[in-house]
Each structure stands twice: as structure tokens, then as C-alpha cells.
Image (cartoon, rainbow, N blue to C red):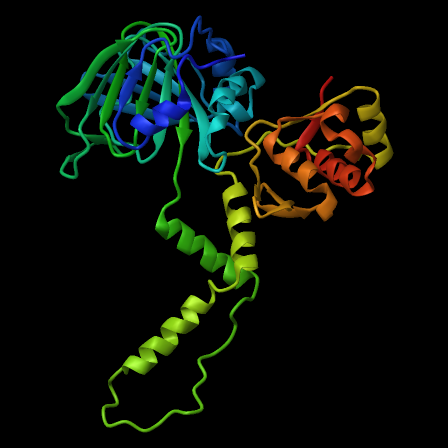
Amino acid sequence: MYQLTFSLEEFLTKYWQKKPTIIKGGFKHFVDPISPDELAGLAMEEEVDSRYIAKKDDQWEVQHGPLTFDDTPEDNWSFIVQAANHWHEGAAQLVTPFRQLPGWLFDDLMISYSTPGGGVGPHIDQYDVFIVQGSGKRHWRVGEKRDDYEEEFRHSALRQIKGFEPIIDEVLDTGDILYIPPGFPHDGYSVETSMSFSVGFRSPKKQELLSTFADFVISNDIGDVHYHNPALSTRGCNGAISEQDYHDLEAMMRSLLDHPHLLKQWMGEHLSQNRHELDIVPSEPEWSNEETYQCLMNGDSFNRIGGLRAFYHEAKPEIIFINGEEYALPDECADTAKQFCNEQVVTAELLGNAIHHPAVLTLLTQLINLGYWYLVE
């Protein structure tokens, strides 16, 4: 199991979304959770999001997966696998130490394999990332956060910038961690063949929240009411939108937010939606409640698939949101509902007396049949 050598709580106070930093030896005795061959195997799969990036002289080449690795050059190339935690149990273990942070902010674990000189060029990301150096060494430069960096279009698939003055300019060794907040330019290239593991956290944008809420309102037929003003009076200026008109229409829009239950439903569904493919294999044939119960009583356990997003509102924990859908348990099972979201493994010991509750067994069996939880062999 991977353990951080520093206090994440102290780190948040000093660095989170404030300034980049390198934590030397952030993981002690770090060992890559996945081999290069295993990572390459994932990159060859249709469902897995992967990229190949190479540079020759000043020319960049980018290929999107599924990848093949025929005729690759000796150096100056990398390949990247997004959401590797969805597809590889060992890689998913690397995310565990960061579960002290809100799960709804976590995006994915990206893994990069690079030959000497391999990288993606100077660029800026809009998310928080902890880049864990695996085997090999990688040189990183990070610049100040500014608004005047100039984009450089060397390849349509790479949003690079022309350059920056570094405030961090160091080589990372195995187990070191580089933290980069949103908006700070950075550039990394491999000094020797290496593996890097990026634990990314992505904050939603205002535009995204507004857009998805509007979709939720429309799909649920909420607010299908026209403007109504039986007290309308004549006016001398036909082209004017009066202050009263403005306030009435503004109130109509704001009233859509005056439904806490609906707002919480939308937020739970939205935040539990995944941006990346999941390794979902629905059960065939389907499980019965009795089979689920018997396995638990026999000491078996059920694992949550990698990357599955499951959340609840603290004020109403008996309602949970999994992969964009709402599920409910009786009020007396609220603690069990929270466990489905907070824990990765379901066992009889974890469930306690709730294992005998029909609603709990029904929900767990439903989640197993959907392919969200699976029996540990």
C-alpha cells in the first residue's frame, strides 16, 4: 500500500491552489504499480484513452489510441494512458493516499512512459496535479502563473506555449512528487527512460455547472411555465424593457434554484458522472439477493470497479449517486449508504447488521448486476 511521507493537511494549507512545489521522497521506496509492457497493453485497447507523442527536430507527431508500437524511434517519444486507475487494480492503489481529498474533485490517474527526451512540450493545465516520479528520472520546469503566455501551434493536438522563465527547475527521482496548481506553465522531459504517474483533480467551471443544470431542468421538464403578468399596463415606449419586466424575468430564472431537493439531485448526478470510460461488465447471468447474501456470509467480498464515482449529500446520506444515477435506501440504512460511497470493498463485517436488511441486499445486488461491484475471486 502506498503511503505519503508528508501531512496532506499541512500541504493543503501551504500549497493547494497557491503555488507549485516539489516534495522530495513524497513516497518512500516507491515501486511502479504497473510495468511498461502492461501500460502498453492498455494503450492498445479500443476503450482506453491513450496518446503517442514524439518529437523530431522541431516537428511534433501525435497519435491517438488504440496504439501500436511498431517502428518507434530510439528516443524523444512518450505514450500516455488516461484513467489508468479504471483499468488496472495495481495502478488504482496509487490513488488511495489521496482519498483524503474530496472524491468529487478527483479526475483520474494518468500514466506516462517516456524515452530520453520524451515529453509534450511547455503547456498550461487548468487542474491540480500531483506528478509522482516512478522509475527513471525526469527534468521538470515550472513557471509563474500569468495571463500573457503566448500559445504556439506546433501540432493541432498539443496546446503548447512559447516558453517561460522557471521558478522550479529540477530533476525528479523515484518517489519524488511535483505538485502543480491550475494555470502554472510547466514542461517535463525524460532524462532517461522513465514512468510518471499524475494524480489529477479537476474543478468544475461555472459554464459547465450552468450548462449541465440547464440540461437537467429541460430533461426533467422543470419550470415549463410561461411569463405571466395579468397586471400588465400600457406604456409609452414600446422598445423598452422596464425595470419591473427585468426583475420579473430575473425572478423566473432564479426561482429554478429555489428547489433544494432538485438542486441536490442535479448536483449528485452531475458530480458522479465520469468523464472517462469505465471497465463495466454487467453480470450475466444476473445475481439474486440470496446469492449475494450467501457470498457475504461465506466471507467473500465485493470490490468497486476502478474510477466509479459514488457520492452522497451529508444532510441526506440515505440517497446516493453512482455514475450519474440516484439510488435510495431507507433512513435507518443511512450509514450503510455512506459506506457504499466511502469504501472500495463491501464485506459482511463492513455491513454489520445491515447485511440482513432486504433493501441493502437489493441495492448491492443491483449494483453487482450493473457491473459496478464485482466478486473478488
